[in-house]
Length: 432
Ligand code: DLL
Figure 1 (cartoon, rainbow, N blue to C red):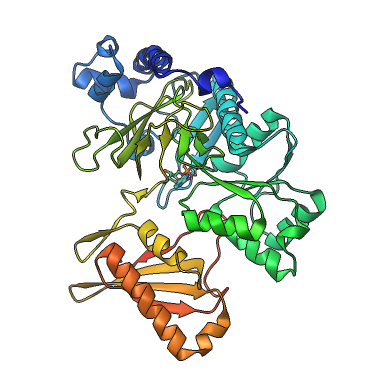
Figure 2 (figure 1 turned 180 degrees about the vertical axis):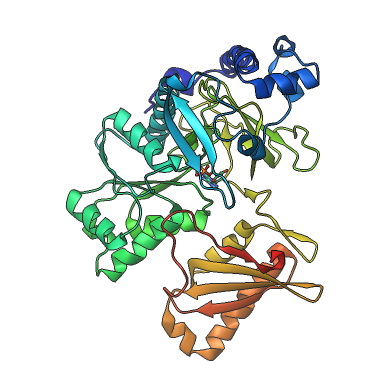
């Protein structure tokens, strides 16, 4: 089933034609209405009319997160404030938040994009949807909320936190669709168990997870514990929020709403476009956004594009699961380490749970990588020989994947910190 079949299953020729038309209009619009873009174009003597084909996009300078910060709060807005109907912001780790704005048409486009991805994932009008993302400036909750509402489903704006109450609501209100970060989804599954319930006491059918990385193994666990079909969903506030891309029922990459968000993959170091299918940093240009157009926004997220035919019938290009963020990458003893690689190893071991901490320290000139991870069954901690064996096999697997040694500590179930939003798993004490 499709939400907008004409756009979702366009031929490549039609899609490229539409993208080029929209790109040319968007570039002129941004140049005419946002002094920031005009200045950047003028500096390199680039004119909107120089964009004659999609490949010409690479002539346009990148936009980065600090451009939004430097123009805080409304410097990149392309319309009179009177036309802005919503403001969101992403928290950011330091200083001012990144503010993003929406016109009425932007909200409509956003809801439509979200509705497309919900339907692609298997969500329906008949769903009772519990949104367990935090409501507020974060785009996650309202994004999914609007999309599901547009579809005509029943939305419960539960927000995040108070997990026992979430489970009670889920059970009593007959929730069929769960919306959360994957780490919060797993935490909910632990609370279900703690409350003496099982997936059979719930009526969950589908879970739209996103806003942080998740592994195949995490999805298997969500499916097993909660009895739902989990999908991965990607987006970022600077572009729109969720609704940029999401997995369909085939789960073989996230379809990008590329008639609204044009994707490019560039090499992390040279920033030049990579060959089709290669891994690199995702760069997105908004093709239809009015309030705050983004030209060649560097997401810092590492992925690749997948163009092979998808069984679902959608022709929208797919992006692979995010491998990490270029600014998340740790350099430990000169070796590049992505937290997602560590997670992949941990989640592949059945005795180990999904909760872990990565701690990097420096002893003299020597970087040290320590990993604390919960075992699934506390009894294991009483059997010294078994425990030692498990620690050694985790270390050996990590060595193969990362090419460096790590110290590994197995701890009791439910003893590490839990998260209701995006999980923070890495502590790099070297920077302090
Ligand atoms: O997290 C938007 C969103 C909300 C997406 C709900 C999906 C569901 P921000 O708070 O601006 O927006 O964070 C954006 O989160 O650049 C990625 O690094 C990360 N991210 C988002 N989705 C995924 C995902 C929302 N599916 C930043 N896998 C992005 C991995 C993700 N990382």
